[in-house]
Image (cartoon, rainbow, N blue to C red):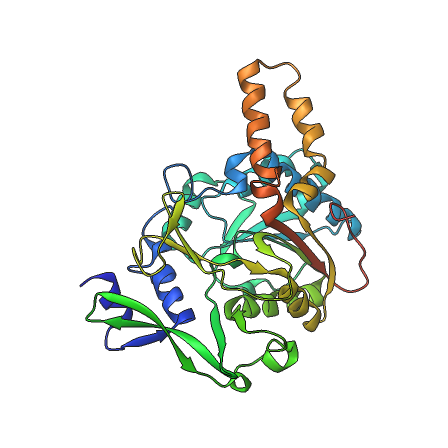
Length: 354
């Protein structure tokens, strides 16, 4: 039985979000359940793997935010979708240099993929790290949430306006082999959050982050109850007008979404304007949205690179700055990757954003 027939079974079609969820996260045949997609030998590479300096800047930012929260004796650092564990390992390494903070923090990793969790458990041996299955397991203590390329891989719904009527995008299966997109009449009033967010105004196309809203809702409850905030790194745009950003990646190149199902990544670009609306709607304070390159520069990454390369040979120095360019250049990750930070109302902290 091939992946397509397993996804659809007795059904001829599925809503786009259900199709994505099965293709990526099914425990038996889902993309993230059977391989490590991250790294040069995988399908894509992430910032923590490009340079450890990325993780260092995130760690310094966490410590500074903890200080702003008046140095609580216990603080949770929750990483959503930690991939192969590189960011977590860098955080532990940096945190260990600051004794008071090192005594205060505990890292909690939320990972849906059992395959990736096994990789993480082999690499990360610190007693300061625990794995959780849901955000609801966090019962107390201020919490800093970190998400790097997490929300882009969550299932979304798509809606398109045709002759004044909204249609929802589905994926149809033909003869257990061929897949096609097709659009079915939809009633937006039946979908929770639409009215409050006023999504349909002046739009002809909508990408609705249905799973992201669930996560953000759970996160908001913890932040409002126990204090803390969330910093998120992801690729996306800030325009009000939405567009079809669904894409697939295999071997570091674009792939057709309905081909290689279960063997290629499916992602979308985050609409940070919509995320802003969602966050404010949940009663949180949006501190800012900026480009990744600007954030890293304001955090002092160039100064840190200069220190590290002061007495090294040319090849080592060239490698450090080549990796820095990948993270910061506006023609690479620096512009398209955005950083968004939100926290509890009444707490002002804008390091890296102002």
